[in-house]
Structure formats: structure tokens, C-alpha cells
Length: 197
Image (cartoon, rainbow, N blue to C red):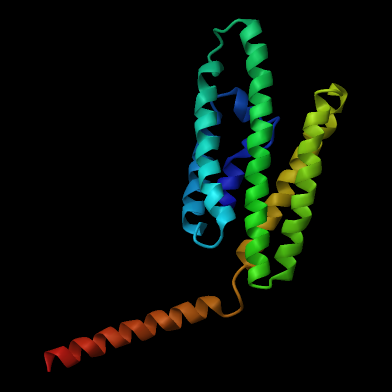
């Protein structure tokens, strides 16, 4: 998920990826995220929803590609920029809302307070962050502030995903899985020996 999220720098509404061939990097990142959420969907309904949001995100990016060819009139490009920006803001809000809600739900379930706090904080920040983009339509002068905030927000989400990677399982979880695997392997070997006898 971390690699996928880093790849989709397109989560930043001002990302250069939306205006260049780099949009295919974001599509690749979306596919990595989709693969991750296909594995995580069994844990809660938010991750299941994220699987479908990832598909929508990929399809939207692919739908943008014809407008990357510089043969359109200025009027068409102006309309595209406005419509694509509104679409990106809506999809990215849904993307972050469901992803962070899923992390929060899972962290509460396993009683991981640190991850739950980070996810909850970032969820509230998401409400403010994406609301500011709506405000920008009325106050265009704040675009520079939003551009800077986009990077702060991006790294806060990366930090939360990294915390999930480091703390989402309980202590000794990996060792427990390894022990179970070894016990099952030994049990199979014994069964084979018993059948031969």
C-alpha cells in the first residue's frame, strides 16, 4: 500500500501527473493499491469499498489521457481542467475517507491506540483539506497555500501507512505464523509416514 500510495502522487490535486504522460505512473500506483485492497477487503467494509474506489480512480485517469494530446481548443481545455479538478477532489476525498476509516476501524479492533489516533487525526484533516479546495473556487489566491499543504498532507498519510506497517500486527505475530507453518509441515510428514506403514 505504501509503494502504491507513493506511486499515485496524483492524490495531490495539483500533481503534474495529471498534465503529462506521467499519468500512467499514477495508473500503475492505482493498480498496486487495488491489489493491496483486494487482500485487505476481508478485514472490513471500508477496505472492500476501497477496492471499487481504486478501480474508479484508474478508469478516471485513463479517461483523462485523450486530453493530454495538445490538439484541443483552449475552450475545451478550460472546461476539462475545471471538470477534471472537481472530479479529482471528489474521488480523492472518497479515497482518503474510506482508506483512513478502514485503518481506524482495524486499529480499534486490535486495540492499537497509536495507529487509531493517527488515522483519526488524518481523517479530520482530510475534511479540512478537501474543503479548502472548494473554497479555492471562490478565493483563487489561496492556491499556493493549498499547493504547500498538499505535500504536508501527503507525507502525513505516508506516515500513517508506515505506522500500520510497523504496528498493525501484535507482538510476536510473525513468529506465531512461522511456528504454525512448521507445526503443519511436521504434521503432514507424520501423516505421510503413517500412511506408508
